[in-house]
Image (cartoon, helix red, strand yellow):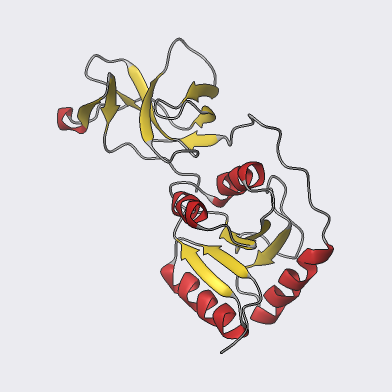
Length: 218
């Protein structure tokens, strides 16, 4: 049986990529788990913190950009490798909070070199306490009284709650999670131009909640 070198969490919305990479890395000697998006990854992190996080950048739900900011803030000991087919080379793309970058489609030997070099990379300071990962909110809706709402997935407790949009405001807003109270920064993407079916509204506690709205950072 191979000796475990380190623990690694692979995050990618494509199951074929997760499976193939997990098999290759397990064969080498890594302890590997996988998740299909950022929210699934956070659930995995609650169970066990890996040594290395290898995450795709473009995923539905919580994308890699957001996930890495949350990881840097909450789990600064984790070494983070971003991966994507949208960028080339070995430089970490601008705006990506990662220690290294792996270009999708490159060889496993290239990935092994990147992982091996992590020990020589100077760690960046964790984000200051209270800095929230910005969420990109899509699928904005109006409730039955024509009030403007968005649904937000809290990156801290992973629960979904509605937030009413008061006044004109701007594209960047803040809200406190209805469940855990965490401060969340979010940006509105798209127009408030549709009414959800009446059946999509339900009562959650004392607030109005909506089903069917989605968020993404593709």
